[in-house]
Every structure is written in C-alpha cells, then in structure tokens.
Length: 141
Image (cartoon, rainbow, N blue to C red):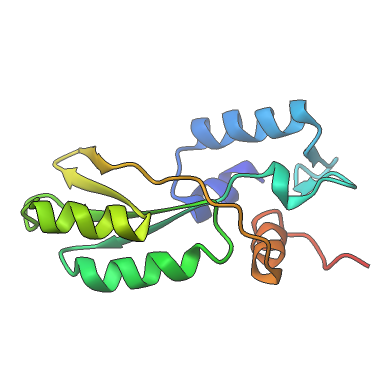
C-alpha cells in the first residue's frame, strides 16, 4: 500500500498519498481492491517523473558518480550532503552544474537547495524496470 511505498521512497505517508492521488487522477496509476498500486494499462514511463536521491555525508565526488548512473533511468538526480561537513565553494557548485546533478545540503532539520536538478528524458530498459519496481508490477507481456 501507500505506507510501504512511502517507506521505500523516504517520503511521508501524506506526501505519498498526495502524489499517488495525482497519478490516479491523471490516469497513470490505478489502485486495486487490495489497496496495491500499479501503472494503468498504456501508461508509459514518460508520464512518470522519477527523481533519484543519493545521500552522502561529505564524499561529493563519489556522490556525483552515483547520481550520474541514476540518470540512466531517472528524470532528475539529486545529491544530499551534510551541511555541517561540506563547505560550499565555487568549484563544488560548478562540478554539480557541469554534471547536471542537483545539490542539496541538509542543515539541521531542513534541506537547502544549492544547484537545481535539470530534467532529463532517459529512455532505457532500466527506466522501465525502475517504474515496474516502484509500482510492484510484473514485467509487461
């Protein structure tokens, strides 16, 4: 159900319910009688925005490498670093902009965006698998 999905996505139950409601209203997702969610027949992954998040304490170069791998299936890739451990420098900001990966710092109990994650349009088998796993679907026939 939505609670299990919220745990997998590291979102609050409320945010997950809101997002699933939007997908349902758009016709992209269907809630079954059991409460399980699945993609609607004919709903392509192009209608879904997948955002990948890589969290590290401070190893930002490793995080960029991982975030770039996520762009094979995700529309946006964001790195979250510990704001108490990382100093924001022009070189750091430039590295994220050049990689086209978002940068957020966790500062206490909130996040501060430093670099926007531009939208990508991946078309790969890994994207279909990611969407299938997200909605616990069986492979399409």
